[in-house]
Length: 130
Image 1 (spheres, rainbow, N blue to C red):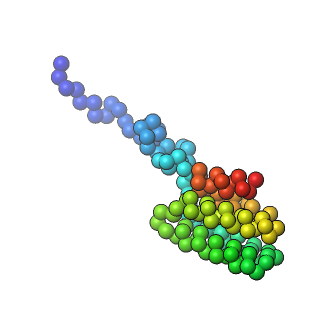
Image 2 (cartoon, rainbow, N blue to C red):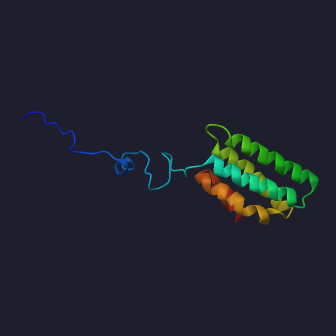
Image 3 (cartoon, helix red, strand yellow):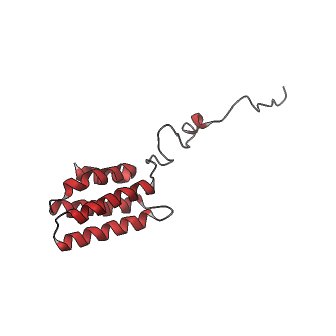
């Protein structure tokens, strides 16, 4: 019995990728089980937060700290490979500042949408918002 050419018998497409440890496009996840993050969408949500922050009545030091955190997160999201854990940590601090100032209610929607994009890294942030 000789060697048989199986070229064309088995096809490889995206349906097999998940079973072989690759990306399954149907799940909307990357190779590490994290949601695909669109930094552009996250930055747009941060701009909404920034506009709402300007309209909020916060103690000046709290407003200054909140603007600084938003600046840091925007900078991180501008990197080629943003650190999701760092983004989640900084936004967790922002949520804490806003909660203490009584202004979390107006920021909850945009923060939750960014947390959802962070995948597992955003879990603690989502819990803080609950």
